View 1 (tube, rainbow, N blue to C red):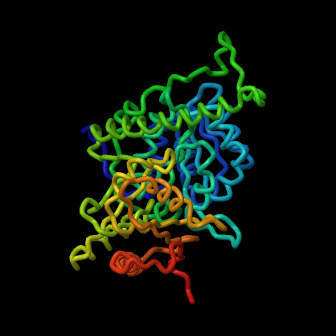
View 2: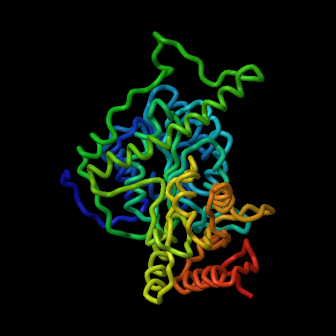
View 3: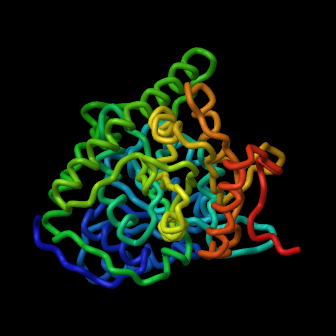
Length: 395
């Protein structure tokens, strides 16, 4: 393993370090809490001459993504960062980036959406963008935020993929908490990410191309179908980059990670920082004789439906934790996908959904214990009082 260093970093600082090592050609940004530190720290690297990136300051997040799109179409390797309302203001351009098959990488530091105004973390922003054609990776801690960033370009730039990637992690819980992070040596990180070979760059004037042409009934459907095929290609690219990264660092990643799930009777599926809390609770309940297990979903787009069905089918009851709601629907966005994935499985658990952690409210160990005890009661009695419920709501 190449010698790097261990540092105490916040999630945002770890992401900025990854960006420094990647040294993208262009970073365009309009800072917004809690992702501000990412581009703030990175802009200092640029000012200090530590990275040759062209740092573009813009007047809005819509303009930031527009600048990223222009730079990526011109042939540059491009990154940015945003959160919450910033991501929402990029909405139109998210679809442009994916529709033009531009391999942009964005740190998406998850935060609630107004109203009421809230600057703390939940998944309302990235879950709202789940159908915009971006690959979505979720990190549990600062280490995973850093690791996902280094793997993201290998996924995005794969010729069979050519899609942008969001590297998501929880606002404040991860973005502002200092943790132990193992950093690669700079040369090892650069070698892993590799040199960029742009595909059909606009600045190649000897081979002129058109981006953003009108595409009406004649070919629009075919182009959308090609994005679907790009997402399908991402499934293999994600695993390939994870395997390369594991050989370099010893840290293994997949579409998801399991904890004591193989012989579990009841299970819980979660994303991001709550996965660590649930692992602690699962270990406690195991000592009490309750066969509990957990699954942390890392890749939400493309959604690993068949793999999840194979991993979860043996459970009696599965609780899906959503840190965002889908108002008026029958449950949160992750619940919809998981339950649909399990529907045709030859053996499947009862699936219940709990909305938690909105606006940054922490999921405590005691709330995790109560959650899994409720799930165990469902497994023992077969009775479900509410298939879709909220945790942590005060009376």
